Image (cartoon, rainbow, N blue to C red; front, side):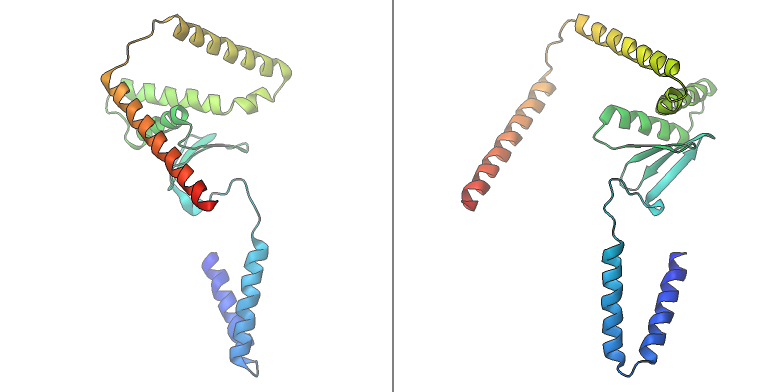
Length: 196
């Protein structure tokens, strides 16, 4: 489609240039017009992912999980709900990645393959929760209550555990982070000092 539009633009441009008394002047006006039109067509957007950026998709029937070339996951409920998962949401991103990997390379063991499918189905239901919750107030309250109770139960179990001593690797990682923070702070101070 885009190639056809580009070809049509080229044809129209050539007609204008060949029918003009000053081809060079006509060409420069056309270039300026096209440039201004492109600028006018730019609409600020919150989220824009061209279809050409989709690296691979897995269709589950009512839902689809896609991965973009820049690493974002897009969960699509065919009813019109899209959820975009960025790498910054590490645990959710890892969850999407594990489902994606299992779909790309299904386990040979039938039991593991079934578990992977069940897991993908469960995650699909969670992503579709806003749709289910919009059906009626009872569903909304039931889902919200179940979610909150599960969250509270898991928080309580974490709080009940004894703190584990730090490992050497944790201490080393913290030292590296502290040093990086100091370098960043010093650099920031130097930049601010140079600006004044």
